Amino acid sequence: MKVLERKHSVAVRWFHWINFPLLAVMVWSGAMIYWANQVYLIKFSEPLWEKVNLAFRLAEGMAFHFFFMWFFAINGIAYVIYTIVSGAWRELLPNRRSFIEAMQVTLHDLHLRREAPPQGKFNAAQRIAYTAIIVMGFFSLVTGLAIYKPVQFSWLTWLFGGYQRARFFHFWLTVGYVVFFAVHIGQVIRTGWNNFRAMIIGVEVREVPGE
Amino acid sequence: MSDEEQSSGGQAPPPVPVVVEPTPEELEAARLAAIEAIDRDVAAELKRLSRRGFITAGVAAAAGIGAWEWLRTRPRDASLAWPLRRMLRTNESLAMAYFSRSRLSPTFARTRINNPARINGGLGLTQNYDPENWRLNIEGLASLTLDDIRSFPRQTMITELRCIEGWSIIVQWSGARLSDVMAKFPPPQLPRYVALETPGRGYYVGLDIESAMHPQTLLAYELNGAPLSWQHGAPLRLAIPVKYGIKNIKRIGTIRYTDVRPADYWAEQGYDWYAGH
Image (cartoon, rainbow over all chains, first blue to last red; front, side, top):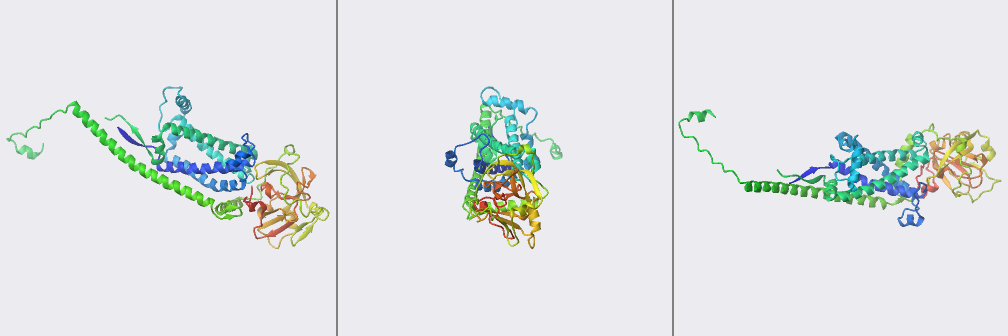
């Protein structure tokens, strides 16, 4: 027998789908900024930059970055407030079992372990990933502020070890989002349509034994 | 039992209905029918939610793409789509409201100095420059020689010069505070902006008055302990660590007080006019 299970609230779905293009624009405009000074290990050839149309667009990149940063920050902060007020944080925060379970989940996903550990709405690996991405978002905002206003917020810049180190963290957090995105997309494809659809319509169809 | 039924005693009791036990087959059929009915309801509800969800998603995606296209195609204001330019102005207002002259750019130990200092940007350095007859022209108020500038209290600071490209260097500047020079040759009333130009106006920047009056804003004549080389802007340049490198104009020819937002070379190319730290 089939049942519909409520999975993602309407608020969470809006936060998720608003964040997706905002983060994409922040990464895209950030790449235009990075082009002007490629100093953090990752360095692409000039023809490649030109091919993807990210070369010689520093001014534009900064303007987009400093436009969309507000919407990215507001959406992220609103999401965090929502998870606290609604109690959804209980299903999202890792607990003391999560780290062992996350390893078991990973082994299971890699077909190295037969059983997945028992889970609630999100498995332990998801709890860690979805919490880590919020922590990363927080650090993107504060490292961003540290390099945006390094005199007015010089204490913050100092906290990250200076202007160049703050910039270094800001950059590697972005690489982290790109990696997160790749894994996330892979997992969503693997899990299937029912799961993906739940992020659009809110419910998931589940088969239960008919009584 | 009710009183009414008791009072009708004596009559024959009502016939007991005959209960026919359903066969297991019938039970199973009923169970399957019930499951089928539930599954039908679930399918109908899923269809309803899907329609609603995907229509909303489609409309939202179309609105997002529309907004993006709108933003990208707006008429340009100094090389930027005007909403982007307007947002830079909003950010600037917030930054100016928060700005304080008492917040200083961090200073560093001598050992951290980058020597030789990286050379970057020669705009305005090749035109109309005659070292013998160079003067700093404070428009309408004064014409100063380098010795005149040197007669102001000498300030030395080791600060980070942050280029808008992303790199930064730590350098030592020596010079006179712009605020000291402005105090000696004050405008009739405190202006909102200060404009600075190279001789021949090959390069020009605008500053908000608060940044111009910041104690670390120097008219610098020495870099890392030596007089400025021509690539670094001899004989006199601006050292302004509360701004990106683009505002640290080399070879200053003219200073002008104004209430009209001054033109700025890189702002015209699409950069933030304020460019402040």
